[in-house]
Length: 152
Image 1 (cartoon, helix red, strand yellow):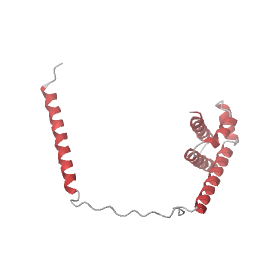
Image 2: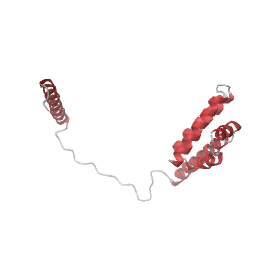
Image 3: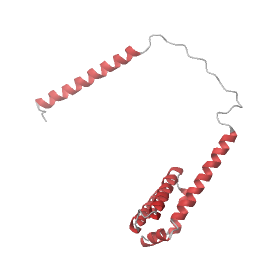
Image 4: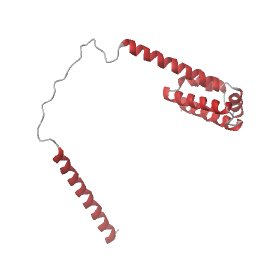
């Protein structure tokens, strides 16, 4: 297979430009390096019993995280226990018990995201910003995400 002279010329031009750029940037980078080698600074070690985070702070953060997660699980479970959610899942032939059982197995990020979406949908529905069809679609989307996250 013969290549056209135009293709060969273009290829040579790109290769030349790439090599020139490579050599120009590497020499410019070397020119900016300091000429003097500095001696390494002394490393300071903390005493073995010192911690960056105290055990009390660690325990407090763990408890806060646990409480937040539990509230998110409860909120999402309540949202999916509403009559609209029950009806949407029944119409889609999805077992509500299976979905509610899967909620605690979600990761923290998935749970936080779905909980926030459910809260926003409930708020918008209560304010009249969402119709019955829209809330049903949001419910089914949340259910789908839960099932995909857990059973995928």
